[in-house]
Every structure is written in structure tokens, then in C-alpha cells.
Length: 589
Image (cartoon, one colour):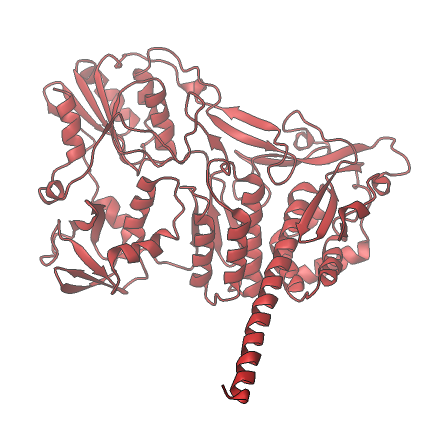
């Protein structure tokens, strides 16, 4: 090989590996900052930390850390960032360097002083729920009822946590501080705090997302789940690895849609069916007026607009935008967070069709290509094509209730007829229409299950030393009620679309064995959501509490399992038959 060519290749190779090394170091530094960010935001109880706009701080902090090249640079910048809001925070390259007596946090006189610390019942800091279901509180910081404990646990005075925040970098953070009516101790340097606040004022969180905003968003998402996601024991995810992958992608993203995709793929790894990432300016929910599903390992057209005389129900799709259907769906599924296969397929069937208004989707059927325009709001169109029958007497003494749309008032009016029936078929392939009161007529005894909904009680980060749960239930309004219908042949139809409230409903049916359940497993995701907003118009929804089955066993990722499984067939779809309902009717004979 020519020496000049060899030298050139060597230089290019060195540049490539140096570039990779530099990027890797940037990601490690950003992850180090992110860990401290979460610890101080959610667990350090100083007054100064509670005055900070944390979304702006994440953006500013990312911009400063991104300049660091060495561990010494990182520690210096961390001290500059966090000392004005957490004056007793300490950083070191050896955890043994820390002075553990924490005397610097103790005022000269302890008269009339209390200790303050964070308690989280779920989490409300930075959330959009306004503390209705989930709460975060700094205990003893004012004289109102908002200062009392959320639950019975108090960490020790001067208690601190020591964490390795990066490779060979450690930090020590107090999680309790002394306080009086006016401030926490010790107070931070007022000039440094004012300087930091001035820096944050200049950050515009409403503008289009730049690199630092993207990094800040990923850092915020990471920390919400790192400390408060209740299902890490149930899902198989390396959250730190997924975090670094998302940080890395931030350097390549350019548009809002790019960043939305990054956030979607990041949170998809959590396998939480409630996880949904949206952006107020991205309206990519338009689709051609068709629907499709995977049946017998083939992508089948299941609905078409009546005016379409080219594509028929039952047609097999062989190509989508030049890709195989499985390849196309693989990318779609990578952006969907789901705890079960049923919910994943339901969401993928929709999302695979959607995009911006009037854009095209190319599909092949029997080697003929069709160019379909996305012209309808898919959510509205799919809703308009659902079964609109609220109820029906299918045959003498056999009643059908569509729980997706029937109101409780209508059920109440039907009760005399249902009391005279021999069988009741309840269709819950969807979401109940506020009609869970129907369960009361199936119960022979009052509900006694006390702890199937559980809100985590948290004082320490990283899910360490969990305190316990606030137990919740429906006992208050799940009392047996007349007329009693539990002596009928009751059949419930479910599939992967039944999520959340539907699974709370079905938890009673399964737990008390109130009916024969047929169809497919439900979505395996339950618990009140706890959404939060991010700079750039993004919003993230997720599950904030743990829900188990009525016997205390795992519900997440499992769902309510049918007693009798039913599968759709291509033949049934072509013939317009509801094979689930047919099976239910068969069971009434």
C-alpha cells in the first residue's frame, strides 16, 4: 500500500475513534449531570431548590455540561450549577473523601427548629395533575395542612445519601435539613443564586427544540421514571442504557418530529400501555379511511370506506411504502409502549396508518399498488365505524350489552328484563362508559378487596428503601345491589383493547368469578395516569401507581385472561361475522 494512502487512512481512523470517544464521554458526562439533577430536584428539601424552574435548569445544565472534557471539568461545573440551590452538596472522585458528620448543616442553635424532607405519594413535582391523586410534599415548610406528613415515616436528622453518579465520580446530598419559618439551613450564597436565576430567565422553553432543550427533555423523562415508575420489577428494561441511547440520539435529531420519535422509542422500553408522547404542533393522526389487522400471520384489510370499490375487506396487504408489512410494522412497534401483545397490536394497527394530513401511503394488494391519501382524522373515523348497538335481545332470554357505549342509566332501565333473562353477554372490547355500577348487580356479597391499587410512598431515590404504599380500592361504591343477576349465565367478551378502567372493571369479574370470560387477554396496564409537560410543546403520559389483581398477584403485563380463547379468522372477516360474539351466543345454549 502506498505510504501516503496508509497515512491518510490512519489519520481518518484515528479521527473516527477520537470522535466516538469524545461523543461517548459527552454522553457519560450528561448522564452524570442527570443523576444529580434528579436527586436534588426530588429529594433535596432546600428552599433554594424549590424556587428553581427545573425545565429551564435542565436545559441550562445540559449546555454547561456539554462543554466539559475531563472529570475535573464535570465536578467544577456540577458545583457551579448545584451549590446555589444545594449548598451542602459535595462531589469527589472517592466516596471516602466525604466528611460524614454533616456538622455544616446544623445551625448554632436548634431552638424552635424542625427538620424538613421530601415525601412523595407517587409524585406531583412538575406533573400536570395538580396534586389530586399523587402528591409531593416538603414536610414542615409552612404552617398550613400542606406541611404535614403524607405518611408515617421520617428520615433521620442530617441524613444524607451518597451516590456514584459517574465512573469514579461521587456525590453526597442531604435529604433532611433544619428549618424555621423563614428558611432552610444552611442558606445558599444569595449572589450565586441570583446569578443562576438570571441565567435561567434568558431560556425560552416555548420555542422549537434545540440540542440543549432536547437533552433537557430526555433528562427530565429519565428522572421521572427512574425514581417513580412503579413497574420496574415487572418489566425487563435496562433504563440507564436506554437513557444513554436517547441522549446520543439527541445529537442527531433536527426537527420536532425527530425528537418526538426519540422520546417515543425511549419510553417504549418501559412497556407501559399508558405511555403516550404527544406534541401540540404535530398533527400526524390522519389516515386513509381503512383499517387492517394481523390475522393468521397476514395483514388483512378489515374495514374500508363504503365508497371504495377497489380495496375489499379480506384483502391481503403485501407491501407498505416499498417494505414488507412485517418490516414496516417493526418500526411502528418500536415507538409504542405496551405491556402486552394485544395492546401493542391494537396501537400498531392504528399508528401504522397515520401521518400528516393529505400525505400518501402506498400499499400493494395482489401485486397491484394503491396510493392512499390520508384524509380523515383516524380517531374520529375509527370511532364512527364501531358497533353502535347499545343493547339487544339477541334471542329469547339472551341479552347483549355493549359496555363501550351503554350508559348506566340505560342499564338501570333494563334491569327488570335482565332479571328475567337466562343469559347476559357483556361486550367490553373497549372502554366502559361509566357503567361499572353494573358489577354491583353481579356481586353476591359486598366487595372486601382493600389493596389492589397501590400508590408508592417514596422518600429515597432510585427505588431504594421503599417505604410502602397508600392502598386504594372501590369498596366505597362496590356494594352488592338488587336485583341480583349473578345467577344468570353471564359472559364477558374482552380483547387487547380493554385497558385501565376496563381492567379495573374486569378485575372484579375475574376476582369474584362473576362470569365466563372469552376472547383475548386485556392490555395488562392499569392505574391512574400522571402526565407531565416538557419544553417545546411535548407531553408525556404514564402510569403512576401499581395495580395488582384482587388476589394480590401481578396484573401488569398479564392482564385479565379469558377462560375461553377466541381468534379471528380471515373467513370470518370476509363474511362480516363477529366470531367473538358467535362464541358467546354458543355458550348460552
